[in-house]
View: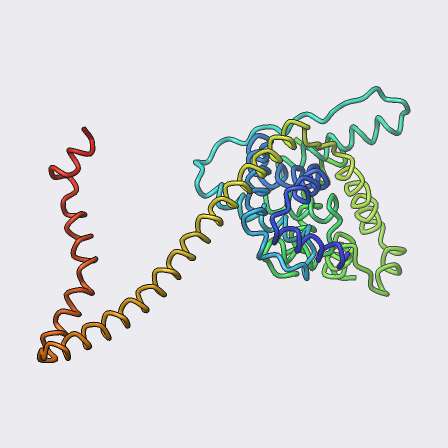
Length: 178
Length: 150
């Protein structure tokens, strides 16, 4: 992992376009998913997705490879999202794109998908900071210390957000969400 | 058991942390056990939310990044050219000043000029390019510029 980060750092310093192409493809789903949970809007998340990679190109020389690339990338995305939300007028949150559906092949698959849809709906009702903490913890499976670094908050705050976010999702998990 | 213990247990469960007393507590507390099961289900459900980036988004991003990389490359090349020019100008200015000073000192000596006179000439020669440039810049917007536009 450390070698990979060092190689990325070298490539970013050279502004290697092939490396950037590869990174964009590698992180496409994870970064977009994080941005959607952060902003609550897919369209805005897609704009930020592009801006994030442009920023990675411009600030690539600042990445030294000692830190995990994923958390550096997510920190850039997060800072851009915050700048963006400061510039924008508050708008009513739009629904996330409906999850893709596929023909259910078994009962448990259907049940799981329904549960995922319920949780997805629940996530949209959570404050952004809880959504973000849950996405980083459970979708990105980031260690708590990394999450703290990405969101620039103390470890205790991260733990508290995850706990509160999970507690707030409980009604949706039980199918009793509004 | 106080409510604090349950709160601590749930915080540990939510954050995926382990402490020796936790499993013992889970054996005896149905509510916290249910919270642990719920957390596991929520984590699974969160991982199952299918959010994917479209190919359009990826290719547009790659294209924009490559275009920006080219712009940055051009800017860097231009900056390098400016630095080289600045260095060359500084070097030439240094050499010219030294040569001009020696030349005027020699000429002053040959025709027996007082030192302040040839030194004033040196100042005038040194300032000449600046004065000419200033005149040209001030002339912008006057008949010089008008003639260029025509």
